[in-house]
Length: 301
Image (cartoon, rainbow, N blue to C red; front, side):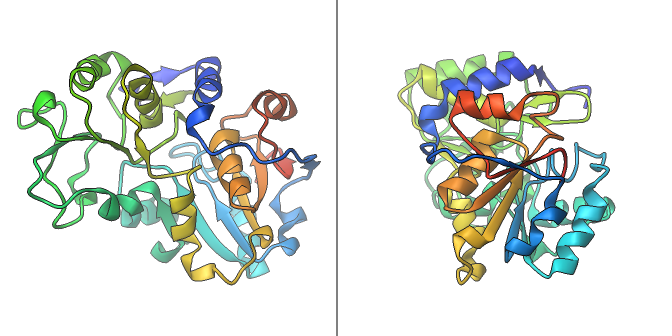
């Protein structure tokens, strides 16, 4: 974690407000109901969509209330989907990480923006794409040639497009050559992780969404965002649960502009927890400022 660049809450929040025009429009306001946690309301729903960072974990550490909440959800017999914006690893690796924390999800219950990569990348033969945060195992067979940038085999000026997956040890200052290249020659940009930040136990990291919006500000490019709050990842996650009315689905998350906005834009109910991005802040004040209102607010899941 020491290699990552960190953001402040104020910097990240200002970004979410400044770039809201690239997100789905905010649904009509609702009056949030304060609850103790998911156990208080689970009986009103037939499916639950869970975020990971800030809800189940803070990176490696598990949210203390997570184990009891997991057991409560399983005992209620509701369908479970974990929808993450993590662009650093594949679904199998995500499943292993959850299991190591005591959450026994199946791979078929886990979805992420990168689940849409196969349908988003062009076929091979169209030149190579540069990728920031590349894990080669994420690239589907038959897709375009994808090369890690920075790297010896990827010249940013020669790339046919840019794939933003994970920042890890990549900092904002490292992005300057990419910005200059894409200003001179606009090309497609696909963002596997639309988050601006991820809440770790003691800091908030820089994530690809921040870089993508910065690039969009300085070019005429409209990035393709694959994860929350955009509709396709929800459609994929709920494909086998289409018989459940949206109002019987509860989306649990820690961020208004991703988890709450994405769920409410699909007609689902939302629970904002205060253990991640919003920790130490007044959630009602944030909802008022952003115009994005959750149906429920709880101290933790």
